[in-house]
Image (cartoon, rainbow, N blue to C red):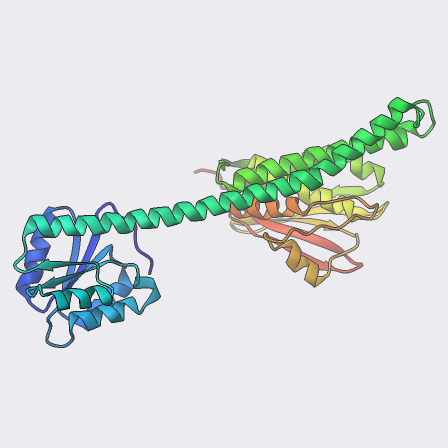
Length: 377
């Protein structure tokens, strides 16, 4: 088991003399330490498994096993190797001190105990190990922050620049007269293309910001009663330009009396991304359905399309949050793969799991579960 975080440091002691253990208990507990002592080395390892201490006090001379040997055994376990061990001994010769340090001990306290010396030495090593753990945690957090920053710069540098460059190029053509604003296809092709390109850039930017906040735990989840039918209708209206352009039929099969208990903005983001992907991979004049399956405590939302379908290998890649996976849509629409990473994260934060059922050429069903809203009595 991992070390439990408590306000009081937890000290574990092994000494064959019960009187020494009682004295240690008296001294440590009145100095605001948690203490457990044993005279049995087998019981000592049972106590270690139950809870990893902040520090171990180990008697050097014991009838069944020498303290140095017991220290070597403890340091042989990966999960215990960083726990500081202070030896308790009546002997203070240099040879014993050197041996104690060689087997992994960090300090000595001589018997009979001087309370001030004992507490000072324990406090020093407890503070050192806690400071070390804090530095290690900060190093891990710093690496995660740097990885997040690198991934963000990669997406900004490649995926966000692409639609903005395309939009700038189209506007440049209009300004130079290469594209005629009075031409019969200007509205249908040029203006639609510009709107679509800017939609892609805006959607990517929203996903990028949401993902960055989520990865750095800066996003707050506020669950509330959600009208799922209305949420689907809102998403349909938001993506109407894309679905109308491909003449895709959008069906909302979610009953009007189904309510979830989840974060409104997160679930909107999830629906927007999954539906946007469904439109992208559904052919012209295709059909997309959103269905619901309510249970006792959960409701499952399904986004079903009759598009290209996804291979089992690609499903694994899509659901791998560490893989940057994207494909072009049926009309060569670009994608980043970031949206579905964000969807998984947001669904998980709301107590659900995002899953995919699909066959190549037969369409796909993306589905996830949410807690049902329970009326308060």
